[in-house]
Image 1: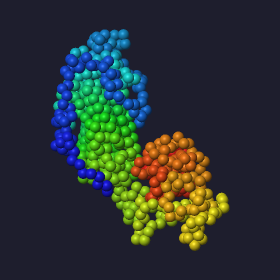
Image 2: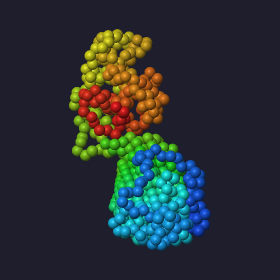
Image 3: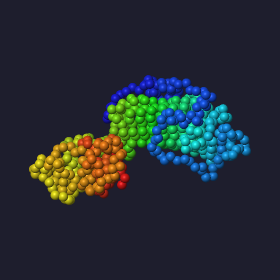
Length: 567
């Protein structure tokens, strides 16, 4: 177990290290001291200014984790049109040529059990234009502005009292009910403790919106809600971009969180899937506490002004496990990339993170699986355990006296020759070669000759073999590619490795081929090949096993550290 550093967490510890249920009574002291503008003044900064705000914030595009789609009007749906300037709230209105004036009136026309689209024309919808907040969306209602510009021309600004079954009295601009949708809006609730969209034990879709200058957060998810929150921008909100509490789950994908307090605050027993998001330039990227267990995958968490991820109390975020790598990029955060204030480790499986910027306990291996001790005591819980055990069972590798395996020891060139001979039993395809530093009495002489005749290995230009030299990882991949006759692979496949420039020029074709065939195994980060570092016994077991899988000599093993190829 890696102890990292034990760090107290402050803005002061009393501000952060407390149950999630008490968090909402805290008025963002410590980083939100700005006096919010009254709504009447705020209107001057409405829709036209939103695009300028986003430009000023330098919002970067996020690589979508979910495809970005613009919703079509469902078949059979009723479409009601609203225009805050040219509309009229009358029973004869609601069409494109005679729209309603307010969303509030349009919602009153929704028939129970129907699917209704309320299509907003560009403009600003506020109390001054006739709205009554919160806007409570009945089941099946779609509230839509302009998805193509994420609502930069269609703003909903305001808030009103809402009694939450789990958090009592709140202030919300929109309350999203069962099977509702919120699309293509800019949502702002500048009132004290104001929330943009409140989601309570429902399953709405919130997509292609902008949440900005909400006093507390853009979206609050509570109860046993399971929303889909996709492709939104959360920028310059007073407290959090999104807050998730109680037993809520759902999916939060491909959003941008920037210039706010906590990008995401997740507490209670919440366990949402948070994937493919860009979380940058906030105070803290994630604040995870209580017993929350969110699943974090494929996020970019960088350049936050304090910490990338904060974990407190008894939270157990899933940043990769035995079946799937986390693939999160956590870097360049000012204080720590990970600040773990819990008593247990955070398991970091297959992420890009600097060990030196971790505070608290952590492990790069997956959580141990109860009831599965290894045949080698020093391999139990090791990331390569399934590969090592499979290779040992096949009598391709063995341990040392005392029953240990030493999975982190380096592998020498002669040891690697012995392993590949047992794994592939290669026939002779070329003549043997005598080397200046090996005589026939050397214990590994025959193994070296077999590997050379089989096309797997060769010596150095000086005429020696250097049997005791640790074999670098690039050499392992090149040897396998040569002996198994891999044609050179697609060099573009190497772009996934952050250290691709360290691959020797003579190795690039074969390393690319091994990558394409899912032979490459990278621990702890899929994005780091470490081509010049000596290969460990655990790594060689995993890589050779993957080569056997590719050759049809072994069944696949699931591991989050396998770099999945294109074949």
